[in-house]
Amino acid sequence: MTSNWPLFVTLRIVRLAFLLAAVAVVAFMLAKMSPVDPVQAYLGPAIAKVGPEQQDLIAQKWGLDQPPLTQFGKWLGNVAQGDLGTSMTYNEPVADVLAKRVRASLPLMAMAWLLSGLLGFILGVTAGAMADTWVDRIIRTYAYVLASTPTFWLAIVLLVVFSVGLAWTPVCCAAPIGVLPQDVTVLERLHHLILPLIALTVLGVAQITLHTRAKMIEIMQSDFALYARAQGASLADVAIRHGARNTALPAITVLFASLGELFGGSVLAEQVFAYPGLGRAAVQAGVSGDVPLLLAVALCLTVFVSIGNTIADILYHVVDPRIGATPDMEIRP
Amino acid sequence: MTDAVETTSRASSRLRLNKRMLTISATGIGAAGIACVVAGAIVFGDFGIATDFSERLAPPSWAHWFGTDQFGHDMFARTVHGLNVSLWVGLIAATLSAFIALGLSIFATTCGRWADRVVSFLVDATMGLPHLVLLILISFALGGGTHAVIVAVAVTHWPRLTRVLRADILQLRNADFIIVSRQLGKSWWYVGRHHFLPHLMPQMLVGLVLLFPHAILHEAGLTFIGFGLEPTKPAIGVLLADSMRYLTAGKWWLGLYPGVSLLVLVLCFDAIGNGLRLLLDPRQAQL
Image 1 (cartoon, rainbow over the protein chains, first blue to last red):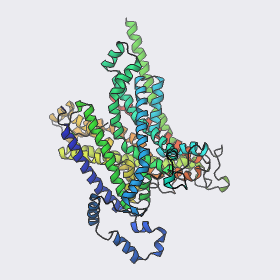
Image 2 (image 1 turned 180 degrees about the vertical axis):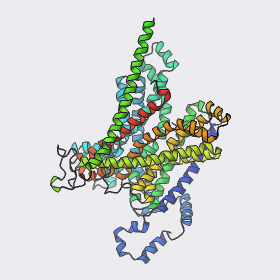
Image 3 (image 1 turned 135 degrees about the horizontal axis):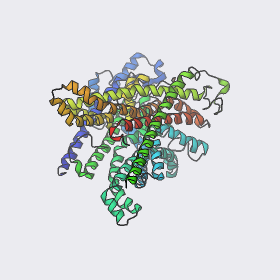
Image 4 (image 1 turned 60 degrees about the horizontal axis):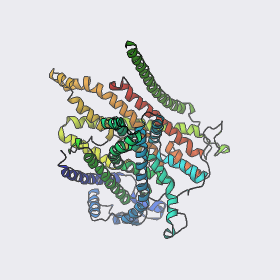
């Protein structure tokens, strides 16, 4: 039934390429539609000192005097060659800015992703195995309330309690202020990472818990679980040997599909903690009309999230052979 | 024997009543909470706008339940106004989004295989970008402000509902009663009005209400990072962004209460949405 799944994987990859192209076109169009004039945004208050001729010169240097289609062609050609342009806000090649930001964001996001997956899975298995008990009710309420909590507000509350109230954690940034980047120790980095990490992890748990719980209940009611119970296996035994094993892959699938939300959360968390990551760069680029950086961030994230979605899709098919290898749109949870 | 049967049936009927009553009351409480916000915003009127520098940054007290901000504004009044703004932005954006979903799902199911492919691709493309980045891009393209937020939220929140509606329409189209109705010579227009609509309306309604929490949270997030509503509006995102400057000075109430209120508002919508879903679904009528 799944004999043609190499074909399915190939189809998914082709689809990913189309998706990227579409996102590139739409993102470029949106950026060009903006009423924010890049030259004005670049100059800021200094615009009073720069004459219209000089402004035209800047526009010419950036290629802004050409028709949008030519600009798009040039940009796409450059991107295909690996040149993402120059960031106007940071006065650096976009690729360098991205690399720096990704290096700051990656530990935060990867750790939050793994921790929320692990914690959510454990909570989900527990709640599912003890369905309709008070343990289940507490876990479910926790997950429902968290799913409705604004990320940035949770971050603010953490900041108020731990940084301002208890003074256990630093108030901002990724490293102590006034220390050279090369002198920052790993411990100091972790110390600055901990609050954003907690904020992201705690919120990421909700979805995976609810999904695992639903799957777990289904499995605990199945014939083989009942049979195992009848043979004298304890609830914990069945939950771990049969339940957890069978829910693990669906949980991983959900985890991969939730990369987009993780990033959305990290934009807000980074904003609250002034953490110099990719999310803050995106916000900064939008505020100051830095089109090359904004486009690069959008493309970079599309690759990242789409690969996550594609992995989720492929996993889903590998896990459940009944779904078959037809690319259809309602297979993802 | 008969006794035993009677007891179990009575017990289950009491249980059903309880759970159904519970759902109805949760939905009612949710609706009441939202009504309070709208009424509160009307009652307060200009109250939250007046500045009073003698009451600057006062902690919560009986006179000011949520304390006051740097201009002496009463935070409770401002929070209620903010929730009201969120409510309206959410309402307009979610409604637009639900209609986009309806239009696209009808297009996907009636205009042949290629239309289905196109819609499926659109769904994937929209879900491929993180919501917040797409929101930033659209808001940037439109130059920010209230209308930008509404458009941005409306054009990003339809994919999930589109999938649900598309699957529903496909299922309905092959249902026996639809086929019989067609063979009795009824036009598609008639079938659409009398058979599809009654089935799709509850889904639409529930989908719409469940879109609200997402719409409101994204609006608040977008406003918080500075791409959303104008800083002069008392939106929750603006209140929280303003509070950031005073949090390190220990003015915790500026950050805590607006967020809690937003959370409660979102939970109200969740309660209504889930309540409606259970109450409107004939398969859950026995609950």
